[in-house]
Image (cartoon, rainbow, N blue to C red; front, side, top):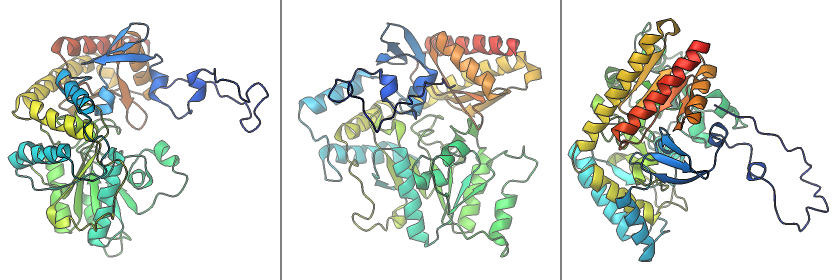
Length: 442
């Protein structure tokens, strides 16, 4: 789902006479780095957003099945969360606070403990490692190595954990890894659930390497895993597989890190994606929808006995964004004081699954694969080219949907959990029409 942008070959080191001191009049596309991606697949300029609809500057509306890559689980500009933001600024509340004590920081911690952790019987210390998910992952990897005194991390095929060097070392995508420019070391990939089509017993390879003194595998500090691989193609691990992984880690005294950055905050139903499996990771990373409003905020949850940081040993400038604490607290109060959102997400997810099953049944020869849990859903196409054509056609019809997987072969749905039923149905109708068109022409 990419569009090729023209490459400016002008020599930037020798400005022309006209350029010196002249006002900048270049098109924004020419001013921005080639690294941009989403704007290539959705070539329009957005100006407004409300609920599950984005509006472009020409007045066209688009149903949003992307939700900021899972950052906007409660939709765009929820009015109650928006009021919290406005009041925060109007009252001159603390915006930037590093890790100083603030009232909004305290209220978030207390609310998170009262409504999220304690009802689930979870005991974690909360660390604020920086503004984004990759910061949360870096902190978890760093602490795991400090606690255990070991350097190796086990990750999984098709996993994605971030773009900084530590997080990238445990990411599977070869294109993203290739951007590092240096060898990515101290990490060992293992097969994710169903990687071999269940022909090979779960963890046969990993367990053999851990127990064989001649395997060459240094005993890992930690294992990091997504319960549902978002960027990897909406690959959902079975609950039994996750329980087996947790047991294996415990037997070998390896820390278990669950990356819940994209799949947490209710995306799969429960607040944490690992709840269904009944496991209790040693560390959990959260970001994206934790602020509730699209504000940058990330958490690394750690079991109390692992909290051996020295003061300031891991820090960063943007660990205390006041508006994010305020909206995160309000979002938890609004959506996690009961189980209504969880029930709704599961029901909507079942509806998406049924629609995808119907589409797959229409094209048995294409061997389409229906994937996912909750409102993280995917429909795997025969190729990335076909999936890209479906996403492009959906955009033309007023729907934002992305692709994922090793070859971008999966049409990936991450709508807001609060999306109205009619908009969900309309978006799925657009996808179905686009699939029929693409596969009929294939």
